[in-house]
Amino acid sequence: MKHVRLGAVALLAVAALSLAGCGRADDAGTAAQEATTIGSEPATGKITMWAMGTEGEALPDFVKTFEEANPGVEVDVTAIPWDSAYSKFQTAIASGNTPDIAMMGSTWMADFADAFQTVPTDLDTSGAFGGAVESNKVGDRAAGVPWYVDTRVLYYRTDMAEQAGWTSAPATWDELSQMAADMKSKAGAEYGIRLPAGNDSFQGTLWMPWSNGASLEDGSAWTLDTPEMVEAYEYYQSFFTDGLANPSADRSSGAQEADFVAGRTPMLIDGPFMIGSLEKLGGADFSSKFTTAVLPTKESSTSFSGGSNLVVFDGSDNAHSAWKLAQWLSEPETQARWYDQTGDLPAVQAAWQDDALASQPTLAAFGTQLETAKSVPATTTWVKVAAAGDAVLEKVRLGTMSPADAMKELQSKADAVGLG
Image 1 (tube, one colour):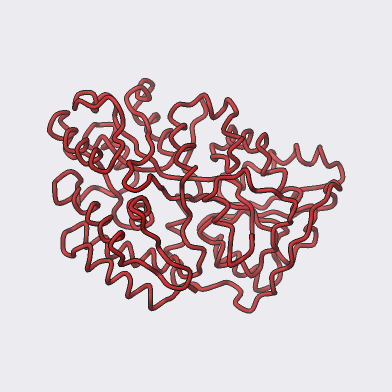
Image 2: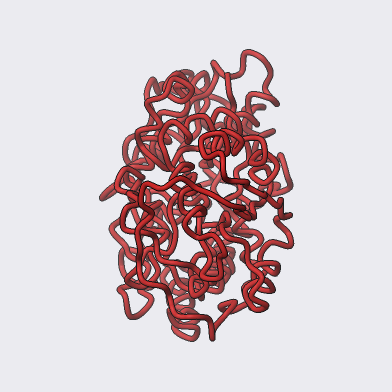
């Protein structure tokens, strides 16, 4: 069985937040090109491509199939370390030395969009998940195409849930609270559920306000202190005040996996990489002791949509062939093979019908959740707002600030930086 791994999006938030003081890489950048067409001509010449992490390591061999189908083309992939990727893009754009095409984290799109070409009109993205498509829209244009996706779902211990009297996943917010309480009182867990805290906690809890009907902005201003936002974070705080989540949980690497496998905290909310991590730590038969489910519903069940996109730079020397490569990487068959090699979840919905994905029951919840998942606002100030959100949620989690006051403080900080 192919297990998904720690996707790039999990690292993006950490990298982005550490760069919260950085603005748009090229404020005086070239005007966005008008949308063109790719046409049917084969790719030719040399295509330079940058990609980060595991993707950068896997692509050189993977794109040989594309080269074989286009005998006149050569794809030169440069692997970029995640910890230097943001500054490397800044430098390349400023100096005019960009590659033809690059992998671009969904939360970085707005920061560099001035340097991206507009997606050709005949590169169809209608088959991709809506949240992934939305992450490529900057202003009124599409600045990239979805490549792979990530979202968050509920993980829970089925063996302990049965002890607690639960034979199916919680479907509503009230049921999630009750199941967490039953896991503690009837199944012997120390805490019923682990909820995000610290770095990336605001982004990690956005499913709560989104599922409660809240919007983060209205197109002209941030909307972070609405009744829907406050109610969502009252719900978040209730898990800590009711003793169902540990406000002082160990946040070091591997701690939540260890608590889950040991049964100390038998529910958590995380991404697809967690499947492989839990099975590795829990041993050969542990996969039969847990499952995944879509997030519980309030007004809706709406999770975070992240991942990476494909962009072609304005300064590309071989834009036509670069877009042909992006088009090939977006095909369902290609995306299914890419998942089989890397564990990256396909952005194109048709790829989920491939047996490599359809045969894994723990992945089904991700496919369903992605149908309604949303991306964060495509604005250069998002990382600053997210960092401010992390800070106020720390006070909410520890009980030193009410959710209403926290959202009021967050609104004030967001107003100060604007929508970019």
